[in-house]
Image 1 (spheres, rainbow, N blue to C red):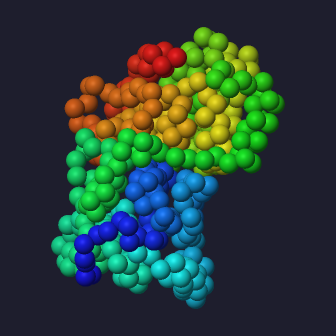
Image 2 (cartoon, rainbow, N blue to C red):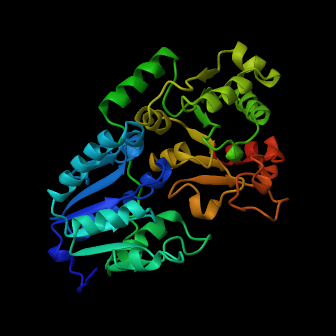
Length: 367
């Protein structure tokens, strides 16, 4: 695409595209904050998948939130074409001066071509046979995830650095707004379970990728240890069959008998929306979880976080700008490998061998 010298003063309307998972979308919010500070008169829209929309919904600096429903493709070709056409019409009506594409999803390249903004920025793409199409789709490029020791937030902000825009520390804060309905629901649940803000521990041990999860029996042991020290525990998980099965395994553990008997463990798994999860974790004294969206949500809400990492990179994906302890295995020099378990087996030895005492020590440090 033709390019000219970028001028932030000339940007009246911008679109930020992040077609990834929940945590990825949440960690893109500092891009919106930075652009808003440097172009205060600019309206900033975002385009995400519909299931990840709660990560940016109610964001004070997002003018319009557009969504792509992954279910469109399952509704038949004509319904999909109608939905896609309606979305394109909505986006075209906004007349964007700038498009910021924060992934290598090819849909972002097609949309940028169809929207014809004056400026557009995306990660470099190094895929044989596709570089030409990609290179002609945008006016500016940034390295993307250039180094495993660099946090994803900083990599996202490189999109603005490529335009000559410099973020500040304040810009880099991740913003998530639970909203009044979510706050009210959590207030009611806390009252029903006699929970007091700042006086309980929130544990979310699951992930859609089970190879990122610490074994259920060790989660149960940790819950029992924390409960024995007088801390009420709130367990959560997504309403996903695999995640709920893991919660049931935890609750069935012999290690948890006394905690369940004393009613110091409250199971809210499968019962909360993402906004409600944020409202809950904002009231916790401590959050304990694995590399997953709830861990990023806890950090965004300012809750001290113990994050258990296995094959994924903690420097790249760790809790952002919050009091934290990252717990990893020191006996596996192969981590982080970025694979779906050892040799893609779905079982991660760096997690199955991680002792309870190490995670408990991290909890005690923050408590």
